[in-house]
Amino acid sequence: MFVAASFAAFLLLFIGVGLYSGLSQPNTTNDYLLASRGANPWLTGLSTVATGNSGFMFIGLIGFTYTIGIAAAWVLLGWIVGDYIAWFVVHRRLRRVSEQIDSSTVVAFLSQDNDSNRWLTFTSGLITISFLGIYAATQLQAGSKALSVIFGWDYVVGIVLGAVIVTIYCFAGGIRASIWVGSIQSALMILSMVILLGVAVVHSGGLSGLWQQLKAADPALLSLAPSGLRFGVVPFILSWLVAGFGVVGQPHIMSRIMAIDSSKNVATARNVYAALYCVFAIAALGVGLTARVLLPDLMLAGGDVELALPKLAENLLPALLVGIVLSGLFAATISTADAQILTCSATLTQDLLPGTGQSYWMAKAGTLVMALLILVIALVGDDNVFVLATIAWSTLAAGLGPLMVVRAFRKSVRTPVAMAMMLTGVATALTWRLGLHLAGSACEALPGMVAGAALFLVAQLWPPPGPAAPTGDAEPAQGASSAPESPVTVESDA
Image 1 (cartoon, rainbow, N blue to C red):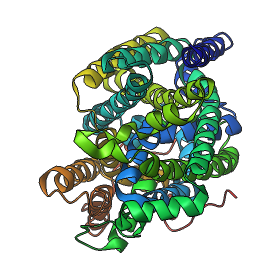
Image 2: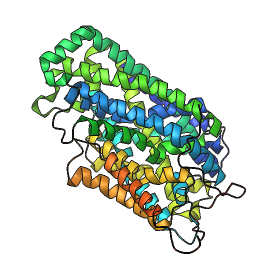
Image 3: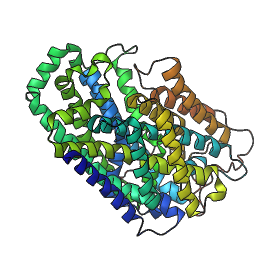
Image 4: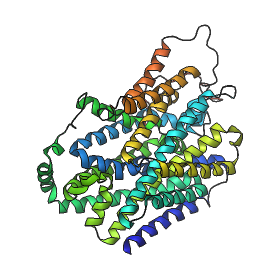
């Protein structure tokens, strides 16, 4: 009763805030997609904690930590450091340059294309919708796992519920609703994770008791290096650092950076995000370790280790707090799904169907179309959240990340080279994971991003013959300086 009541109250809060955000905004496409480039940096940083962490942290990473022990800390450490480097190197440049060239979507920023050459737009748009759609579907699946544990619902019910809630407030308020609601969701996520960690550590006998019980359960859980690494622990750590830097290839996060009210305020958003992200990540790691001690039978008889958090909450917490933790988990999943649905919608209506680009109502209709498509993917797809989320993130990082860095630094790149960078990155990441089966030893973001970046560097050795002709994909905006920025100069935004 109390679980359902508290859970329902938070869901109504999300919907209410989302609907309210839609009342005060102008009915324009630019506002729907980018909040008129006026998003508050504090709210953007706070909401990005929810958007960037999602069900991967609540469901996938906790299950991964349950399985391999403290070695999972390398995943978090690499991810956090790589992500933070990206904020310093790329994000502020993205915010400034995207305004200079008037890009309202990440695909438009990557393409910087003229109407006579649509191949680059089509390629980057297809990659975005394909893999971001899969990523969004994993979020709905993650939320449904929690609801199935607490309420005994079929997975389908949770997936549909998440899709409906996200669609309601995204349709009403666009990215502004996503940022406002995401801020509340982030606070709830962090609170619920910290509460659960505190209670779980006490039940484990404190930190010393937790350590001793992990050692007694399996000494390998205390090993700093996961077993079975073909290349050793250093490439494993490096690959997750690259995966963290791969945030530059995540359109649903980069579009938030483009919406911040000023490039000068990107540092504020970064600091808010980094501080809260560290707290949340450490708490998630701790919950995974305590779950291994307090729920030792979860791996037996084909059990799903990705259910560790909801089962732990159900076993340890009173009903009201179970509702809060469940709401935090569900908030994490839908906060990412909403940003991804909006990004896919923007890509569809602004980039792939340019004739609809100026229509505010077509932008909203695109949200409905993409929400339905992602719902279908969630209902028919695999339900391993960690694996699917990692594949989607890494493939987007490899396919779009290197070109994003090149564009942020205003370096000219010919359309065939840009397309080759994207396709090679995607192919390399998928081959590493699905063909060579090496993802357990090093995240596929590393070889994928290296392959894409290497193509760009090689192309610089063979410039096109004759005088450089305008390509249409590197033109600065009217009034902007035509001189490219140095690729080695990192603009300070501290």
